[in-house]
Length: 351
Image 1: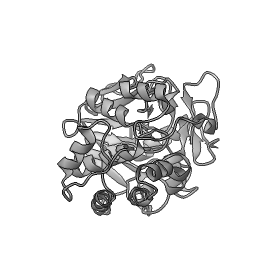
Image 2 (image 1 turned 180 degrees about the vertical axis):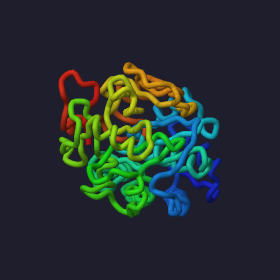
Image 3 (image 1 turned 90 degrees about the horizontal axis):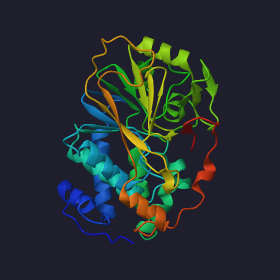
Image 4 (image 1 turned 90 degrees about the vertical axis):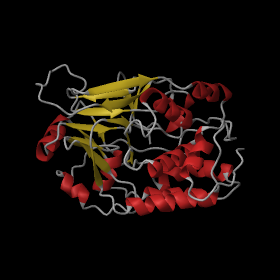
């Protein structure tokens, strides 16, 4: 079990040093986590539901507690503040290092507020984290105390629901909603609460694209919707957008492009759950000059590059060991929660 340590109050560089310069990373004390979460909540209180960002930036999909693969992202793409990052949620659950992952991201957001954007995913939720790993991990790593879980899940209520990039790309965790045609409808939501079971806020974090339909269809996940090409086209037209970038679905090749790049799924957790064997990716967007005519065979828009990567060596070690160095137990059958999978598809639906 990782041992906590005492740090100078609010010394962000020292906190980052403990996480980044030690193997295994050192857990921050409960009081320090409390202060970090309080500081970030204070910052996010004035943030809009949809934040406005500019290129260049790198978009990151689900991480799910795979801390060493997050470090691999920084290795291949540059660490903050060198690179501007947009994280699309699902920072915790499934992986062995949810505590270290979300702690690092919070510290980076506080240290480099204009370089790191954190968006809410469906796993940034009390209900979901109680059942899919984060709750139990906090209990194990903090000697039976749930304070850290409470601090982080309270913080999750403050995270924005999406971002626009150069005013032309909408980035969110999941997808679209039949109850929302305009981004202004998202901007007026009261987001400072647990994710509801239905409605626009739920759909933003739960919905998925489906190339085989044109309209909306109830999702097999039990929350959110599947949405098709006509829905995507109308939403972009109504909001002067060219693209939706989202995460939320496991992709064997690290990404999936729909409808000539109008919708992109980015998945950033390689070898998901230490057993899926999938690749991962981040989307690097250098500019938004879309004057070029759309090609029927295009996967990405001009100025976009999907940087695909494999699991870190530490991920491989955890896979072979079946446990983490921080003492979390071996992998159970965590893939039994797969609710929906079609033969031949390269995406999978998980809670």
